[in-house]
Image 1 (cartoon, rainbow, N blue to C red):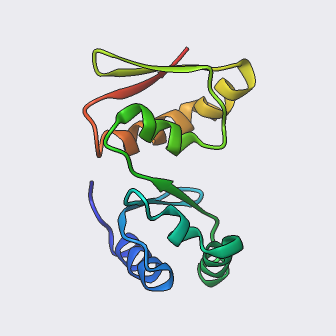
Image 2 (cartoon, rainbow, N blue to C red):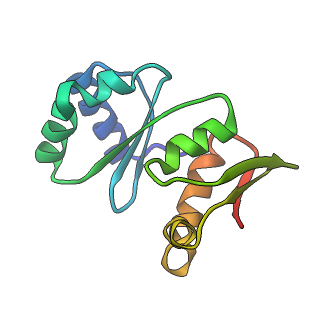
Length: 132
């Protein structure tokens, strides 16, 4: 994972504002912050106040994801609030079973969402996501 100057600035600002420990920041259509286990509630703040403040400050939507050492749990945290039927780890491939609408949201137009999910996952685990 390469840290850009923008992502470092977002991480510093987010940590100062929330007091949560941030592992990484991914910049896409929105900012995705991966925070240490147990720091999600601190990052969100009471009634989502920290999220609202940060979004107003930088003018971008954000998503907060809790890190987990277990790849399946991390993927579930990453795709939340989408509901999946099953996620199984087979030979370094996380196979996700979901209904048709959820599959479409996970894959995205021209597979852009799936590519972005795989980019995030490969920073922490030596596996990739496959949607069934």
